[in-house]
Length: 313
Image (cartoon, rainbow, N blue to C red):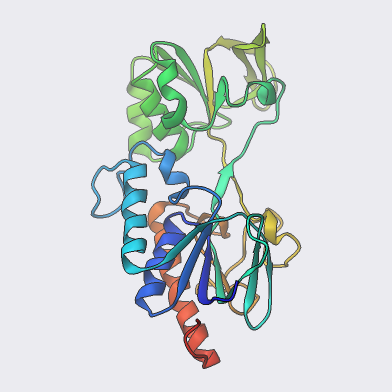
């Protein structure tokens, strides 16, 4: 693999694609790598209403528009699963799919997150069948049926609102209460087919004949007042884990696996930057991811200029 790039971006969600756009416009040669389709987690989001200028838009539609922008500007894209990044004058990015590493002066890690799981009895057996993490993907099969949503943050509220329009009854079981956007939370709570069970902990997905029958839960602090709600499906929205296993032991992560950056998206390894949901920060939204990506790309340009190198070829 003889071609060297100015910038390789690992991940093609909103942060990665924004970095690609800003990188190309800064006259950098840019390659995006991702093991999945461009878009990251927004592909599975039914409606996005808080991205300025877009109005109410389907997540997959927004992702496609972003990707088209990267391609129209000339950023390259490859499907590849990154398993290691090796530091040096030119960083080497190793993947499962290619024998030789890709090389670049700079790397931006924008690999996002994946859903956290409950790790309770029944979950592993039912995962992908009656337990899901994507209402857009799997919600339709519960039309007219009973559904449980686990969690009370923005994702649980948004996806719960979508499911409430499909299912017969929706029960939301959450460790605390509805803690997401207050307006959205109150709207969801007001729907006639929605019940909220706050300050509860889930202990088991009850199975019968290898199918989901119900969800067992109790008071969070005392584990008393145990209840069982019958349900046809469960959707989990209880947080996320960063997709950073490939840089384990690189000393750029915190103890939860999120990448530590400064306000310029720089890690403690010169020439390696990070952006989006995989970094340690307070708010994870599309708009903050695009902000991170833009900053990271500008810093990559500054890094290249500081090295006084010719355009990568």
